[in-house]
Length: 302
Image (cartoon, rainbow, N blue to C red; front, side):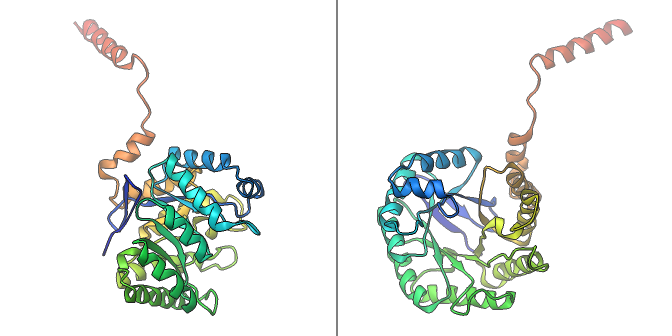
């Protein structure tokens, strides 16, 4: 059971079975955000800067950086975004693109050991992405789909993940540097999606010894009260052995679910993070008032 170590120039983050759950902030992504996409394409990164700082303040351990904008120069924009974000925070980054040239551009300017997001089980993509991961000494997210698409059968998704881990080893990339995304399905469309996710995460942990991640909001797609559902899913997934998730750390409900899972899994030593976050500060002068009341009672008894 190996740890996945990623880093910036000055800060190291470890994703592992006996570590606190790793929160990978998802906000720097123009997909579905027309205003952000237009701004980034025009060279305006003010919203990127705001999203970066907000996620850091909320408690993210890493940040995912994506510049997938139709008809834009994605490699150039991704490289510029990576440089900007690294100037604002020392958190390690996940460099996110489906375009190999964009991954290359982002990795070429990155300082540290990045997490590449992602590689699938398609032979052609593995042949292009895995050498890039090895060249830059990065870690990689392995998506459990291949040329046949996304299978509804969790055993097929496990087999694809195993193929990627084995192919990565052929390129000299250890299993510790492969973080598997088993592809969580929407529970509203597939009633067994939760059970499937937990089962495959356990199998990936016990049989392949790899760390895991997911797009946390996938489970609740199309349903009301999504944050509550996401929070419980994340806590249960962590209990099954999931070690990270790409998510929005600004949603307090989901963050609380993860922190609770860390406490109950024994990954928050002496509940320190939980107490620091949620303990109510003593009211000003409370100690003196309590002491005064005790003294008054003693005088009355005397």
